[in-house]
Length: 292
Image (cartoon, rainbow, N blue to C red):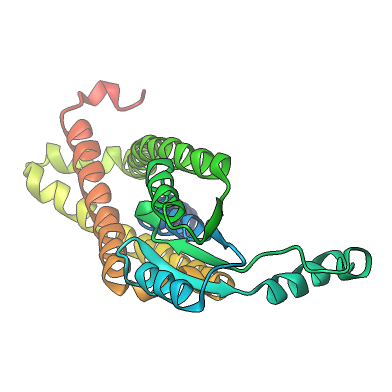
């Protein structure tokens, strides 16, 4: 009978430990993913900003030397990421490939113009900077017009500001939820041993002596949970990098290692402080209140 009861208690204890480890792992995993998103949010935003193309259309009277000089000055500018010269014939071929129609068939001539496609560095993709670049280019007498999506640029910058605010807010909220969930799991595990704690205290054991094995056990569970969370984060990071190689998530090892270390230490710290507070509560609790 006693052996059966001991086995039941042992299974219950193991189940409690598994529950704590899974809670810690899940919370730290989600928190780590949020951390990855926060660290790479600017890179993702910059990636899309640098896809915005400013097209400088050239007059047919533009001389080759003038065009090459403009290309060279743009390429050397600190705000330009890349430039591409597109001849009117290349533009016509692209239009034909997209629409499936050849304007030469019904116009008899190529109405398109030679152009230079300019992609700016992300920090310079603002309405003010684009307006300034446009004015500078239009001051040249061989430039016909400048084309870019003004509404898209304005909306993109506005959305980046909004998203940054909500990311910070969600990060703070999620961190609080993570602490509360892990703390709740640890408290339940300690609660199941409240009578052992009080018995040890009644026979003269010091609070530090009673608390130490509980804290150490919880820290070990925290380490296991953190390791599982880090494995999950590494798998997600691997597949994200394979799916979106242009974002180069994995090419910033310093930030990734720092985040992994932070998640690992956070798992240890939360379990340590949660166990300390939980055991302290039962150590200070009156014997007659242990049943409530």
